[in-house]
Length: 355
Image (cartoon, rainbow, N blue to C red):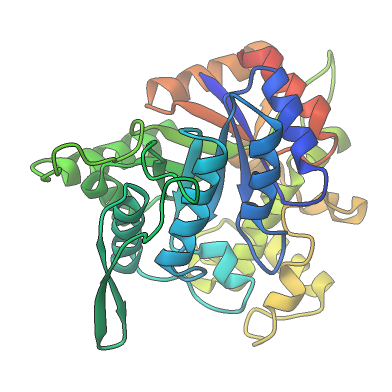
């Protein structure tokens, strides 16, 4: 299985991209969460100039965050800096919208956005709508300004539901998911994608990207001999994923109701510690600061073993390789590690394991 890395945009991110390339990692992604992290297009511009081989990904943008012309301009500009190395994840804006106190957009809007990006980034015209006003748009200047000749790979973000996977099937894109390590769930996503793709017309010669690959974002912690799999080191390495799920549950009553008693209690404690409530209109300002960053020691008790095992890869080398092989058999092509403790060391760890 291929390996990559996902990080937040910040000064010096290009140094991590260079190190990832030196380690032989396949891709380097930057989050698009505007009110939490820096801008991924700025960060990846630096990475594009500092690297020569590694693929560079936006993980993920959304029509609820950016218009299609603005996103396409950013992508085609990156493609001019790193021809043929750009990957764009697109989604409904689940987390990025919730950090604004808003709800994600719809699958229909996601599909229209994806189609528009595919057309524009391949140099074709597309329909652009604002209210009742509809116009056909395209890049008016290409060449040195933007690159629409080399293909950009697109992947649609999907969790457990089939709607996003169906969008991927109809648009001929791959899939990306966050913390989804259940092989049965991956089989279901791929089945939904294949069903939607059946009979879908593709314009001859159209740029649909360089393949329909599947990516999973997670964290990885290789246990030392006799190390506690639920000790402080393992909790610190995986806690950002667990707290992201608890924050989502605290913000989404329907999801919280599906959790077990221990997990619901952890959600309650998280709300208490953040000084907010599940119904508070400003809860997003309390739940999401530090999102996907290193957790505080006092929050280690919220990192439940059940959630660690669900969202992250913790185990001996043999344990991890067995779990990864199962994912690969389910059609996952690339493991994207989100490091927070010591990114260079964590990248080297996954490179040693998989490359």
